[in-house]
Image (cartoon, rainbow, N blue to C red; front, side, top):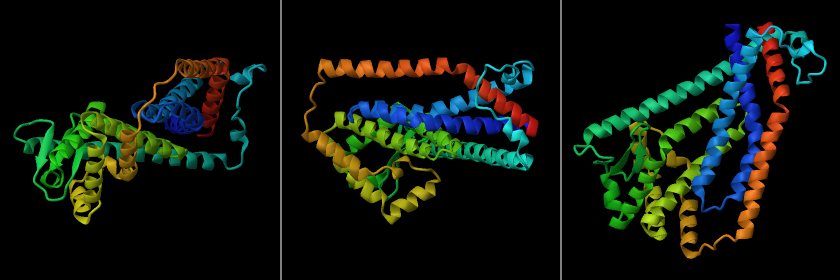
Length: 336
């Protein structure tokens, strides 16, 4: 039991620390990308959320394994192995109560995040199954007889595009095609699965609230990426008009009641549709200028240099990081 609680503390703290270090590099990379490359910008924010969680799992595994299976690998046996020492924890007053309190908090964070993830996926899949069974054609697009206009992607595995009859009455033919192109882009990108992963990672990184900013930025860039895909299938102005109409209808009382009755969380509710529509209108009025070879070369050099510096920094401090994890695991196991 003590090993399990030590693993939870190691995971949550290491993941939160890595998330703090990931903020500035992620912002720097995103700022070097053109706003027109929304898909690449979304990928940066996605991995800025996922990698700290993976690093937290790896850190917890390395720390516990080295502590439980290598009795002679302690960094305290050698004077020339500096690290961030945690032995002071064992000498602090009331350390047992404080450590168990932290362990309980970390366990609640992990358990709540996993429950929220599973419940969200199950509810989305149940709704997706009901929609597929109600569609005689069995295709990706499912029409539902409902007055409130709504068009959304539902489901994590093999999602479907939900279209209500009110949407067909609200939008013109070209606008319906543009809106469908947007949702099909979500299906092609697997955004509902990524949304679930993003939400899980943000919840696991609760001790680092900036993770929720990462999740918000990812949602915005994912929506813009699908807006760009729809703008390639139809005129950007048509896409913007369809977005305005659907957003206004979704914000009505009938639209909110319909979304609540489905029991699913809707991704687009957290994204500012007005700003996205304005972006498309500005994009339609501007002509993209090709990037000069000099600027492209400078950008490549900067990115390669940054990646090389990160790799060299990790390699130079790998032993200190391992000793820090080992020391923290030893201290937690001793207290718990």
